[in-house]
Structure formats: C-alpha cells, structure tokens
Length: 177
Image (cartoon, rainbow, N blue to C red; front, side, top):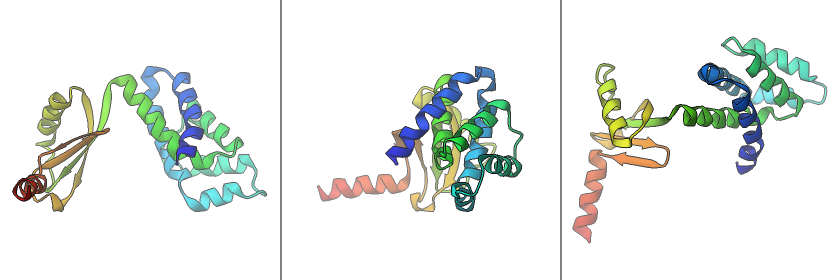
C-alpha cells in the first residue's frame, strides 16, 4: 500500500498546485468520481490490456463518470492513463482530498452512533464536536449497534469514545485490576 501512496503523491500535489482555491471542492468531487470508476476491476483489466490504446481508456472513463469533468480532472486522467497508473487513482483522490481539507482547515470526522442521528440533531452534534476538536469538521455518520448507546468519533488519528460499550470496558478493567 505504501507503494501506491508513493506513486499517488506527485499526481495529487501537482493537481493541487495547478488549481485555485475556489475550484478545489469541485475538482475534489470530480477526482473522487474518477477514483470510483477507476476502482472497477473490469475497467482496469481493459486498461491494462496491451491491445487497448490510452485514448480508448480515456473515452470509456469519461463516458462512465457521473459528473461533468473540468479541464484539471481531464488532464489528470489523461496523464494517469498515459503513465499506466490508473490503479493509483483511488489513492490520488484520497491524497488530493487531504490536501484540500488541509488548505481549508477542515477535517473529516466519522461519527459512529448506536442509533441513527436525526437530521435536525446532526448540526448540534457537529457544532459541539467542532468545539471539542478545535476545527471545522466534515462529518459522516455510521450506525454501529455494538456501541449500545452514545457515540464514537474518529477525526484523523484522534478518537473520542463516549459509548456505553467503552464505559463498560472501562468498568471491566477497573474491576479486574
């Protein structure tokens, strides 16, 4: 996996330097869509065939992707295909997304909840988490019934676990110590 990260980094950084701050979110969405398409094993098998021309792969990918691609995304795709690095596209998208988040001061947060969080409650939860972590958060919610109750929040390498399961584990450790 480290090899893909090493391959992807120059592409992500070059794209990041080539676009303006105003276009960053739109390009990030386009690159994420390209990554979804490039992740398909049948497409990669087609692209890796010695009989397939790079222009054929480019045409196929651009016809399948669900968003309109700007010049920056098209240039990235063409470069990646010409260099035989289509398999690295998901990692390029992930690294590019990280660069865009770093520029805008936003972090991705995954909120694991024992129960679905109501759409009306989510902004309040995110606001309190932003105070706790000291930065803007782009939150996604995952329902995990094994938590029993409460939430577990993962922001990068930081974890805030207020779940019932975590508290039960703490009690178990305290009682057996």
